[in-house]
Image 1 (cartoon, one colour):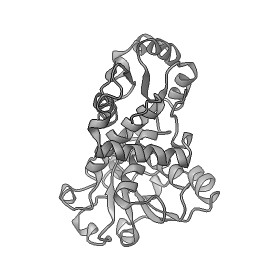
Image 2 (spheres, one colour):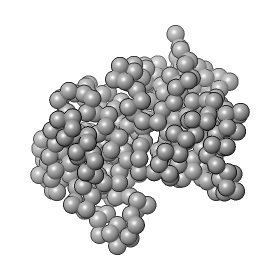
Image 3 (cartoon, helix red, strand yellow):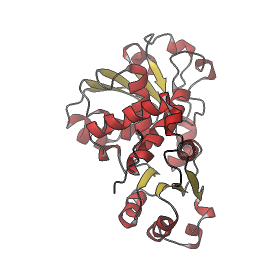
Image 4 (cartoon, one colour):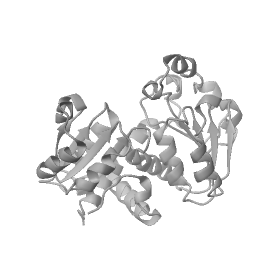
Length: 306
């Protein structure tokens, strides 16, 4: 039985197979419409989510399966003090696979150690968000045709953003990847990412403060929001949240085939005037999230569709 706690749980070969399956699902949805009939997905979400939870639910329903679960800790027995370990043991009696989001780092891993069904980490604190990373990789591969020879700009909250950290970890396994890290001093990528991941693996990167200074060289611009819930001081949040706003003027500096990505939700870091630009890929990205989660469910349940 296999779980997914980190994008690195999958080898590059396994990842390629998963993304190819997701692309086949995109092209041939009817072929997979009954693949998980009789199977149940439990969504155990201890903190709020819209896209991740609903995309997991849509993925399982698209496969012909069914869904049960809860959307906040308040509506589960966690409110009574039940441990994650006990919860997953009970959920294992009801469902065939579980997607878990939790504010505490490592909680899905603890669950996986006690579970008798596959567990997918749907986000644990500021740590990992592997299915978002799989979504990002599928988006890049589908729209750019490759996962190598890319200059990827990561912009905004690079300190607390788990999507950024996961994406860096995943992409350094591909050749000729360069990162342009665009953030204010206060929200720079953590030193352990800089030293233990980028420097250690000889991955070229540069750090800049002005978005305008980076635009011309990028193949991909990955925007992130400044997450209020990750700040301890509200004054710091208010000061930083409008630091970078992508608009038409900044987009005019970019390559014609650059793509703009965002894990969503967007606050105001991307102006709505950018939505009509053909390079804006963030809503496509959300759709790719359903395909990749469908592929992941099939893979972890070991369901093969001929």
